[in-house]
Image (cartoon, rainbow, N blue to C red; front, side, top):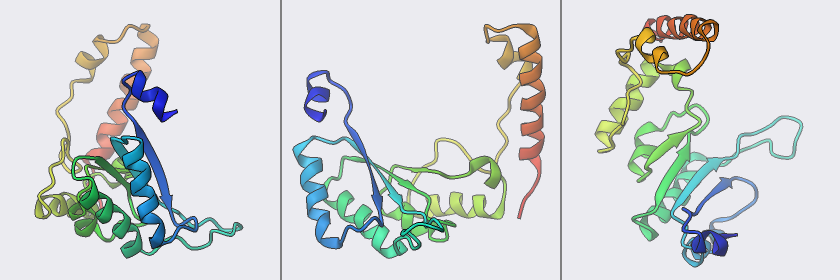
Length: 175
């Protein structure tokens, strides 16, 4: 698959879940795979424990972070995306690890909360830059944005109502 992607000039990306039984000794295998296949982007997920399965415990944060850090050191130009780590209580360390982005962040749920402010501050402290924001409402004119859509008037009206509900929800200060 990766060989075909190269001949088609497609970007090569992969995802790895940390906590499924790998050990630190396997980090070299990952790095060999990245190198052998010219991987340009990797997303790291931490196994989220699921009751009723044999995966009742995910990896420790330090172990998860080690995989990210060692991959960043080995591949300084690769794009690294990290999933949020459970309750994301280690924002500064995660952002300082050299990631390019975060996935699985419940941005709307967290918007304008103390946690969102901590995440933004952590990004600044670790010299990372957000393209957007988790704390400032964007200036959006729903009528103007909806006028760009090629859809019927009824659907546009339903979207407008929902958009206004989301904007009101985002305006609330959360703890």
